Length: 136
Image (cartoon, rainbow, N blue to C red; front, side, top):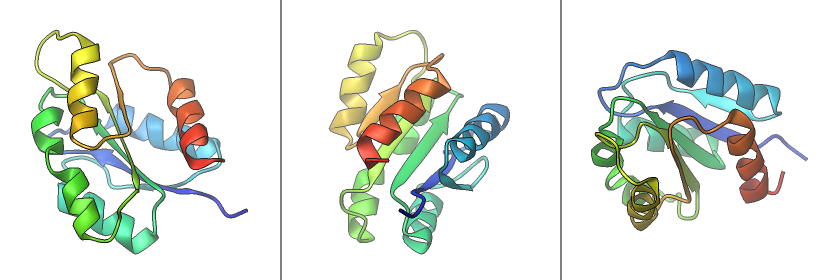
């Protein structure tokens, strides 16, 4: 079976690089082909990279709290680009301030994300859920 491909990066004007790099390395160690776009990644860059690499999932990180704004419309852009059904995951400090994560997760799912993760989610949790989603 060929390796599943994941496009990762930090969306919007966010420049938090360390967690993104750790996530990418952990996903590579778990057997995924990882295309890490780095920081300050636009929705269009995520979509274009996913199309180009025939990615199985897009894993968006955001730590500066504006992820909810930055992620709005990403599912629609994926659909328009022929990526209907691609798995979308987001994690980090996805909203400004302390909010009930159950509500945050509902909003992300309403935006078309398959998973949304709160701050402090373990790498093992993300990898386990990716394996479940991707059947790997």
